[in-house]
Image (cartoon, rainbow, N blue to C red; front, side, top):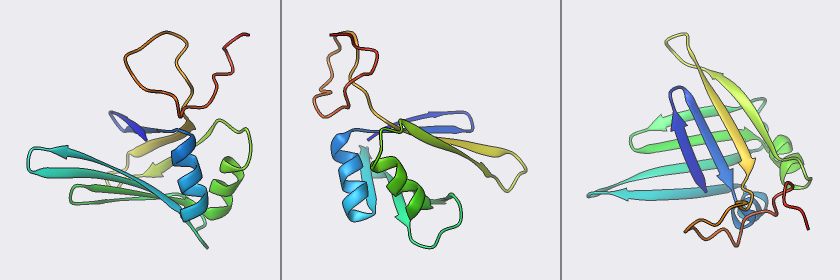
Length: 122
């Protein structure tokens, strides 16, 4: 899982393995060690949920979407989905969840589990 945070926006990019785990287990998680602690991210497919929900618990961000919405995304060629979640201060948090595509240019990064890029020509 790749995560980009910019202002009031969080973008999650999931590779094939992440999407399969989310589909089969109902959640996918990623942690990053920072010094003596860890920053933890989790996306859940929640049964009975009526909309997206995000919760910050200490060093963890838990994001939930309705199970039906996640299933539609994991089972189709749909690239991604987004949500606007209201914050307590009246602002909103923009969430984007996407399938991670292979880069079109060489990078020093393993993207062997990424989805084939639709812009790549044969």
